[in-house]
Image (cartoon, rainbow, N blue to C red; front, side, top):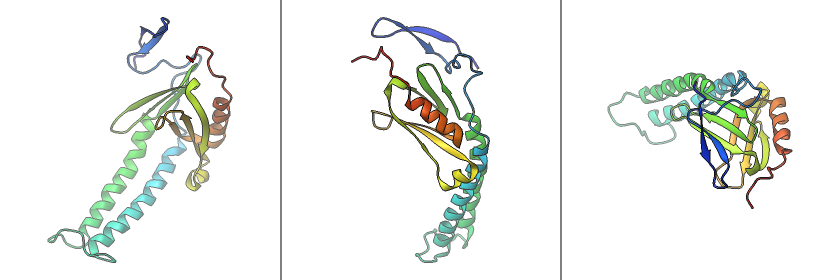
Length: 189
């Protein structure tokens, strides 16, 4: 992967580095970090639960149980439900493999870098000086796997960042590290 940089001028006249591909790894680090490998199993279990729930709902709609039959006439009973189960199960098995390969994050000198996405790749750079608060989330299934999600919030709505699939202890340590960062002195007033 090419981590080439080009200089760009900031409004205050200083130079900033602009990354043409993906950002350079933080100083002293091997590069952007992967999520904990256990996250794949966590996503597979969550996908299995979705498959059961959506498959049961599709089967009920297909067979006309509890609701009028919603599948167009001419389709044999049970076919629509089976198709939904196969599609959701396939996505639940393949999706975590692809998502795990695509997710990366890096704690750089001045910002948190997050790359994610299965079909549409998204890269977010969240400057530490913009952080309002940092928390961790851990649902019951994630707790079984010993995983947690780091969530960083900024002042602007819809600009929070999430890093799922971290070891619970690592997520808490990162939360504390980010929560105690001092804001940069060069922040405009």
